[in-house]
Image 1 (tube, each protein chain N blue to C red):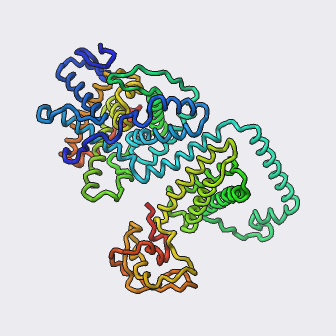
Image 2 (image 1 turned 180 degrees about the horizontal axis):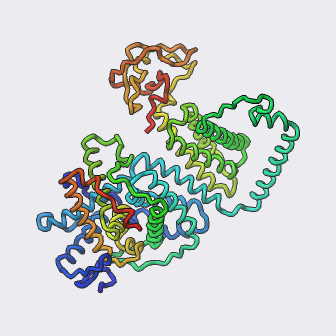
Length: 226
Length: 338
């Protein structure tokens, strides 16, 4: 696994590109029905939101539907959202109450989706985007295996750990924002983050050892959500 | 328990399983991992030596691999296409939900009344024959079975007709120097997004001609939007239409393989000399793969550019990609349908 590890985070910090004041202004304008502000917020959040959904449901079509539904839901409710500045977290990080609110809605919406459809992700299914032929065969083989493993492994985490891992790494939320979204203390998020990564590493190592059990490993998504 | 900054102390709980974290080593590892992740996210080098702490280094590597994996999910053609489509659809949906201004309401009521009056007059004047036509003349020809057209095809044809009507409205506004109305723009956005969805979801259900027409409509709207102002209050509708047109271009170009515009039409100059490298060899997965036909198709300007020789499929790189699909008898077979 260490052979193809990334060297750095693939994304910028959560607040990159959208200062907290600018975000607040966009949210307030969106609440007044300003379509440009809605568009700007969409542009900023569609990626993290889609990644969050994709990691939860495991297929592109459902992830796209959920992303759209969640953003519409957020925008329909944004009029009632009150921007309450959060205390500055350690390291001087500014926290976005909107971001935490949005992902709280996203999390609840995905849980409702499972309840509504009784859907379970198909373990081992390779999403269409992995079949991107721009990558070379060698790279593809490594990537497919890695994503299959990661996806299956994340599903096998206990629910609390999985939620933290998906918000932190699937959606790029900071510890503080994750804590806000999950209504937990930052300390708890850090513990769950550590435990989750540790558990993931064990699952991934085991999957490498016995390839058939990793990617096709049972999913506990539906069970946990109920 | 913990301080405000989130630092841990022995005795803190993990919040998940009500297990108490008492091991100072574990607490230190939790904090160091978090610190390393924060530094990494800030673009700094984590203060971590793999030789000194291989366990922590492995955890960090696992976290970064996971992050990279998730990040790759939103960097694909499919995602970008969805993003454009979804953006336009969301803006359109939200705009449609906004309270309609009084002026707009009056306009809608007047238009609806006029439409209803026209319908009543039409039925009164041509009621019998018109209704017979609608019914498939079943009254005059008992027993005749009316063929039901392909629903998907009819649906895409209807969408195209609506799209054409919307583009016509935009064209007229542009030609007469009138500002673009939000109703026309919304109609275009809705039909363009709808057709893009049809192409994406059921790529085999649409014909190359339809996609070409779709692409041309989008081009025309882009040009109109660039040259005309939307009427006051319709700026958002114009922005949504611009996004829809942009997405339409992306979707159509990808469906058509990105090279249909190079297709020679009857009457174009005869590509006799360069046509040797034009026919795509065999239907391959990628439209950019080229082949060399064994025979040289010569094209009569008065006829369509259809080669009568069967390509052999010898895959030699083509140096004239501009004419690659020109001699393809059926573009749909050669087109990358994703």
